[in-house]
Amino acid sequence: MAKLTVKDIDIKGKRVLMRADFNVPLDESGEISDDTRIRAALPTVNYIIDSGAKLILTSHLGRPKGKVVESLRVDVIGRRLEELLGKKVRKLNDCIGEEVEGAVRIAEESDVLLLENLRFHPEEEKNDPEFAEKISKLADIFVNDAFGTCHRAHASTDGIAKFLPAVAGFLVQKELEHFQRVLENPERPFAAILGGAKISGKIEVIENLLDKVNALLIGGGMAYTFLKAKGLDVGDSLVEEDKLELAASLQKKADDVGVSFVLPLDHVIADEFSASAKTENTAGSEIPSGWRGMDIGQAAVKKFIEILKDAKTVLWNGPLGVCEFAPFLAGTRAIGEYLAESSATTIVGGGDTAAAVNKFGLAPRFSHVSTGGGASLEFLEGKELPGIAALKDK
Ligand code: AMP
Image 1 (cartoon, protein in one colour):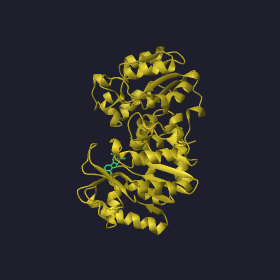
Image 2: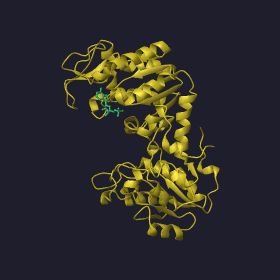
Image 3: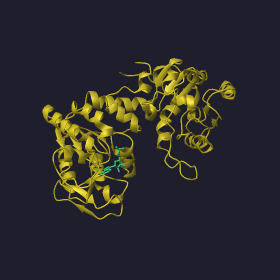
Image 4: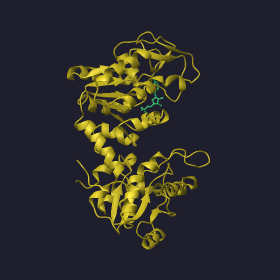
């Protein structure tokens, strides 16, 4: 269902509270090590400023667990925003209360205020209605542009929408459009690539996708449970013994509905889980004992690319190997490089896969790289995200 966006309502002269996802990584000295999330919010921020509204920005940062944690104050975000906007950003010392209300009262059109870390208050994550009402008093309109937190029903993503007209920002709108198109009306053939550590975190994604895709390519740690379920030797690879039956039934379901279910033909194996392990590329899909699968092998990469050549839509969630360690990132990089050149619609779910394509410098050449890890996963599971459900339908 399409949602109203900030463009669909009149915001001139209004007080607009925008929930952003400024939860950026900080280095040891407390400086921002990657400002992608701040930049991702800029189109909506600039639109609101240019429309002559008073902009009140709010976000969480890190996990302060309901207490004030000095190192998680959002001043550092305010400073980066000032640089990016070329404009004063008034950082406040709380997100509710008289002082904040006073600052909003005296703010002028196109002024930018930044509220303190929402999660200094335990009520935020509890979706406390009184807390939501207190934040809502600061504004006339609520704009949610924090896609990365839309899978959480918190006061600033869900509760607040009961007190204010709630619309989507441009980032949320873009994420919704891409995921809805790929799940509801993909250009075919449609291939999904799933990787990552375990099946257990992705069962619902696999089940949901089996009804939608033409091909499902499996790599990463989860491949070994599927291979073992087929009776193959996987050595000391990561296997979820309690998921073997489920793995077999998912493969059977794929066969029943005519989805090509593709497992790695070979692997890069290691004699221990470490970046300095001894490594080899296997000759086939089995792995001897004493060795573990750490990446898809060269034949697997070739096979995956052969299938991806025909695809008009490709969805990718989860690295294909332990790409934190240099010897095991070749599979993820090769598939990333192939997709970056492909003319298909290419969508990357957030989290580790987004981090990998960013690291390889490939992100701009994908159709869409999601900014939400957990949020994109829940979308792919076919769930309605609370932060999206709370927004007004178009
Ligand atoms: P997820 O959060 O489920 O997407 O998993 C991401 C993690 O999967 C990354 O930290 C990878 O190191 C890990 N991973 C990928 N391939 C393997 C593998 N073959 N064995 C163990 N872990 C893996």
